[in-house]
Structure formats: C-alpha cells, structure tokens
Length: 261
Image 1: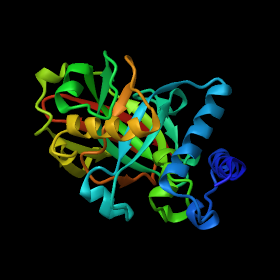
Image 2: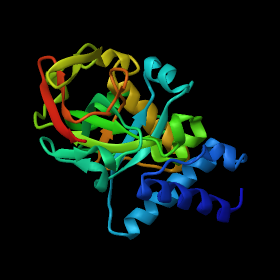
Image 3: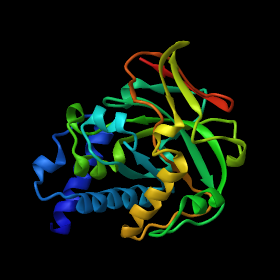
Image 4: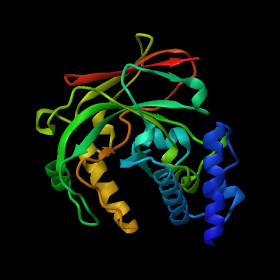
C-alpha cells in the first residue's frame, strides 16, 4: 500500500476524531489495509499528535478477554499507543459529547521502572519491570460507525482508545494477587457488571508480556515511566447517560469519574 494512501487513512481517522463523526470501516474503504499497514497508520497519527505538542506515555492492549472479543466481533487482541492527551483526572467530569459511541472498562494499569523489549520477554521480566499498579478506567471509543470493526480497523484507529482515568491507590504488585482480584463497575451507585483480573489472559502480567513481544515486531520498546494497560477484566459497558461511574478492585482501590449529558 503506498505511503500516500496510509496518510489518507490516517487523516480520515483524525478528522473523524476531531469532528466526533464516525466513518465507514477503513478496511472497506481501503481493501488493502492489513494489520501491519494499520499499525503504520497508528504510528502516523501518533507522530502527528507529538508534532502538535502531545506526548507518548505508554501502550495499551485491548480485547484480550474472550468476553470482549465476542462483544466486538474480534478473534484476537488489538493494541495501541497511549498519548498524554487521552488521560483525564479522577473525579472530574467528562463530556459525553466529546465521544462517538463510548464504552467503559475497568482494568489495572502498570507504571514501569525498567525497560521491556521483546520478542523474548517473560512474565517474570514483566513483574520485575513494574514500579507499581493502580486501578484504572479506560473509555474505548471507535471512529468506525456502529463499531463495525475488524482487526485492521481498530488498529488503524489506535486500538479504539477514547480516554484513560488512573486511580490514586498505587500498590506494589507483590502486595496484590492479580491472577485473582475481583473487580466491579458501578453507575450511579448501582452495580453494572463484575469481573476478575484472571480474565486478562490468566493474569495481567501475561497480557503485558504478550504485548511487549507482539510490538517487538514493530521495533517498539517499553520505557521506564510509561503506563501500560493490559486490558479489561470485564465486558465493556456503554457510556450513554449523565452520572457517576465507579470501578473498584476488591482489597485494592477505586477509580471514579462523572459524565455530563
């Protein structure tokens, strides 16, 4: 696929994000868009954002849990870059109108103290590299109309990233049992859905190792201080109404935010 066409895909997705207007699946508009080309589109838009003053602060893994793959019609995970501009502060209010068709997820987030580079990273390497973990909420949002996505579509759209809220209860991973930590998502103080960190590829460390090794194919190296999201522990829930969202991991902590209509 010519570079000019990749630039066209990238600019079309940027426009959809800026206007909050969805587009047809890129893989339909550009039939030659395979996952490798789609990741190049990601990189084009990340470079564009950085040139405009944004900052690369980490990476994310999505649809690692089978319940998420089933919900969005995918048969394998997606992944994306995390830019500083997508992070919101806990306890603040987000405008529903700033998103197209958002969903809320609860997951752990890891902050690295050491570099991670594949393709031979192990779970032990991941555990050793993490400085601390915090509860997090990710809001996923697709620029593709009605979430009619294949892998190439969501990769081109930076893993369908919308926003990230980090909680304020950092813990050393040795103080947590992340192969078996229940989590619950509530809306306006009513439980919406529950899950467990074991849903994230058995444990979230394994998911991070998978991500490091997968992105090594694109010469991506995870750096100290970066935030890594390993994926949701429960099925994502639509974010359609004004109110308060709260995500809690049992024995660990809570992260909350509000939505305005």
